[in-house]
Image 1 (cartoon, rainbow, N blue to C red):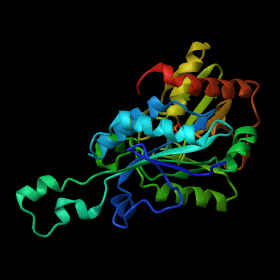
Image 2 (image 1 turned 45 degrees about the vertical axis):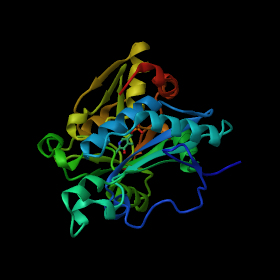
Image 3 (image 1 turned 180 degrees about the vertical axis):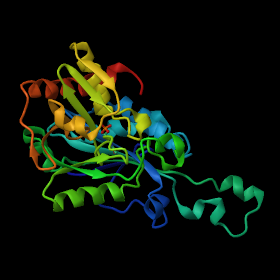
Amino acid sequence: MVDRVLVTLDGAVRDADAPLLFADDIGVLRGDGVFETVLVRAGNACAIEFHLGRLRRSAQALDLPEPETGKWREAVEIAAKEWGAEREGVLRLVLTRGRDAELPSSRSSVTSGDLAAAVPVPTSYVLVVPVPDRVAKARTEGVSVVTLARGISIDLAQAAPWQLLGAKTLSYATNMAALRFAHRMGADDVIFTSTENRVLEGPRSSVVIVRDKQLITPPAKNGVLPGVTQRALFAEAQKAGWECRYDSLYTADLLTCDSIWLLSSITLAARVNSLDGLRMSAPDNAAEIVELVDRGIERAGAIGDW
Ligand SMILES: *Cc1c(COP(=O)(O)O)cnc(C)c1O
């Protein structure tokens, strides 16, 4: 059984243990690129059209060349097939600005003719790896969470579009640092808050709260990434009679709601079982939320484009 699958956009299955990137790839030098993380389940890339749609929007936000969706889709299909249907996998779409050496601005003497030829070729590939061990436990037992200041206002996304708050960029060093900080505090995960004490998102997940028969998540304009899993849940929950809303949430709402969920493509639904040290017991409808997310991502392909 393979434990790594690497496919480039020409459809070639590469040796995943052989080097692929150049040392001057701008994705490596500056984290200048975008990505998607997709669950492979039963040999299928879940909600892939949503992920391709968001990849396109993220690329647009970074002024990257428009991704060739057909080629990405094909590479994903090849990678998912290679991975097989026996177990789940984490499929990543990675798109960087390409090699620094190919950037016109880095060339000392360019004629206008060279300039046209010097458009950087984006680095693009699809990589599948095993699902991390933490996922099974997060799905069944939930996660302990600490709230951490993100240091931004909910107005920033609109006031400062160069902050790329709605794009899934490769610059995730601070997100990973927040998770390590949480681990040192004995917690599994993080909910970021704004300077106004509004709820934002996790470092790699969307936050959804349950209150009576309502599902509420902060709107993208507050500076959170629009989540594929959250959207899939809303689509499915609406059909099942839930009221689904995008609304600003205060940290106080986290304490008064019935349950808090971190939603993401790989872990899917992780219930917050403790918040800043305060235990949160499972509500009666916890299993229903999990089922709605499962069904949602399986049907997300049929919902349409992002
Ligand atoms: C990926 C990610 C999410 C969750 O999105 P999904 O599409 O559900 O995986 C939420 N917030 C951030 C910051 C993310 O990187």
